[in-house]
Amino acid sequence: MQTNFTPAQLEDPHVAESEKILRKCVHCGFCTATCPTYVTLGNELDSPRGRIYLIKDMLENDRPADAEVVTHIDRCLSCLACTTTCPSGVDYMHLVDHARAHIEKTYQRPFMNRLTRGILAAVLPYPGRFRLALRLARIGRPLAGLLRRNPALKPFAAMLTLAPRRMPARSAYAVPGSVQPVAEKRGRVAILSGCAQPVLDPAINDAAIRLLTRLGVEVVLPRGEVCCGSLVHHMGREEQALASARANVDVWTREIEAGGLDAIIITASGCGTTIKDYGHMLRLDKAYAEKAARVSALAKDITEYLATLDLPKQMPRALAVTYHSACSMQHGQKITMAPKLLLKAAGFTVRDPAEGHLCCGSAGTYNILQSDISDALKARKVKNIEATRPDVIATGNIGCMTQIATGTAIPILHTVQLLDWAYGGDLPEKLRHLPLG
Image (cartoon, rainbow, N blue to C red; front, side, top):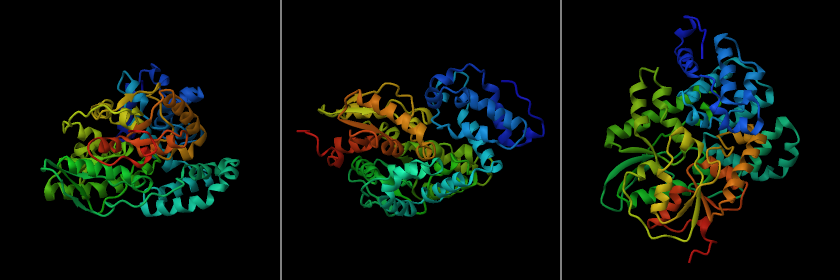
């Protein structure tokens, strides 16, 4: 794609990077076939190619974002299916990240939209606030239908619908510290506690810690860790995201220097995609660039790390598992086979749903801010999953788990919960109703 940026514009490193990305696009349109919003809405401007044109026009003319640009960029899930499909290697993720930051700086959103986004940014990254918000949501749930009738209030209806009806107990591993291995020590890792996941489903990290320590791996829960920054990063709040990244880089660097780390384990693939990008996000920060790159290199999804431990094969189990590959896993981190191979080795029958490349509609805060499109994608995803007739659904991202669970009665678990059970752990609570013999 030909670009027409001025030398003065290209002095901005963010603009210069976007210009290089834009020049790689050859207008082929392969991305439209795998873009969830284009498949759903059929509008060229709701495809990656269409958004690229809008971003190019906005940045080249050095103008503030307008309502049309914001509408179509907001509808992007950042699922990154387009990057998997693109034959030219267009780095759409960093291009749309730049566009969102530009929108945040130059566009005045309507009051209710600003309020909604402000509440999400002030609550979701903080476990204490998020836990309180979910308790209040149980009181407000009867109002969801009424709120849904008003377009400006629809995000609050989505929040109430997504909120769990029962709050799980806090994890026994909720405090910083180190969990020693119960077998001969073979490694030392840190694990990301996260922000939303320990509130919504602390059993995920509990399962990961139990499994790792049984396998001889010391697990460190570092003091001072904060949200990975993903949620606000995808809302264009770049300074808030970078502040979180710097805080976590400091925390993990301290652990690296104190006792060494073989990996930084992440059990939420959305967080993993962002942490693996810390090196890029902080590349212009002289005080953090090198440290951030080291952290990104150590970041591993839990299945990515387990695949290096050469787990023994288990006897077959009479349990069919349909694996939903989160977009941040398959498109963001390019991890496609490790989770399924681990499940198969653990004795499970693994099935793949049709259209596995399409997003379930969760995408961080997308199912709140774009609930109509999200609901359409959820219905499509659930239909494809249910067609495989599984006993249980497995995935690697808490957002997908929360989203899909509101559309089906089939139990959905994190992959590591099934692996923990297969390698000596207790039967997950969600499976206790199944006739497993």
